Length: 412
Image (cartoon, rainbow, N blue to C red; front, side, top):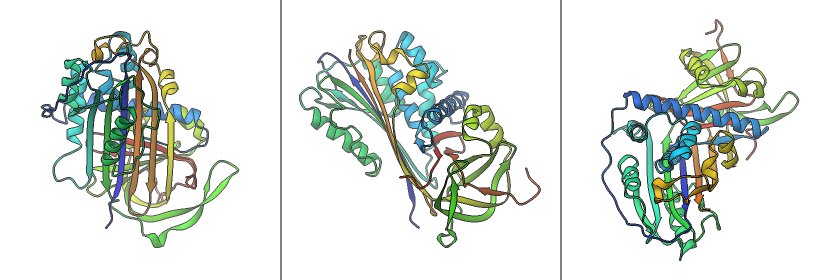
């Protein structure tokens, strides 16, 4: 049976005004704390809070468009960048990203989370990769490089942004393609790097798996999907009945669809009221409450097949969430990377693709952060025939790997 793919990539580009030296270095992974440690739980909670805060912002600004992104990948890449942030820049990043642990403990928790989601012999394939690409001849702070290598297994590679900008861009883009099974191509568009680029941090996440209970293609039928109170569109609607974890209350219906092995699941949240009102009330406490109320029962499931692509410029969104100093020079302070206050984030771009069908899910996501100088009695029915949220979650840790909203399954 063909298995499906979910992949995400983060690219963090750091630009400096001056030309200096970098060294190629590699090393063994850090000693990873156990996945049940309190720091890991605190980090997962913070990452989840950021994920929901971000989807609220996107729902408030994207109108009736589909939404899809990888909050885990964004958090990982910005956590690596945060390792070099200092003073007020670090405080604002921590508040926006919900990084509440001390620096060293936070990075150790990210390492623990990556290890917890990649046990030997699992029924799914999940790979998390990190790499650093530095300007040859530039003197990076050894403490920063050592920390990224220790906790993120981020090997350091030298390129020549100053003299061979486009060749360097091609090298990084090819790494991204390889780590996402060629799903994300040309993440760094022409002109996204300049001769002033001095460091690019990359993170890739790759997932492959099938539904534990697959939908039969013969059961898929065209049905109406309600875009809003007055508009509908015909979409291919998958259907199956079976015992699933489900709950329903006055606000939502919540359904869990596990992948093979049940280590990962897609959580579907179908609001009953107006989407904009639901978006304003969504928070981690309510999500945990709903997830805690699910019980295994016989459910009729109607789920549209969907495939769409998204792209976001996140600089404004992150600034609006409180990360202000990082985008201005001065006052941006990333002296933990360079030793000087000469770095600031100029762009944050996120691109993602998602496909859900009878067999499972296929998706890819990529982000570029460019830093520069300067219970019911009747048999319930879960009929996703109007806009709904979905997330792909690692069940043991609770980490949200992907999060999205289907507003129009017919949109590409």
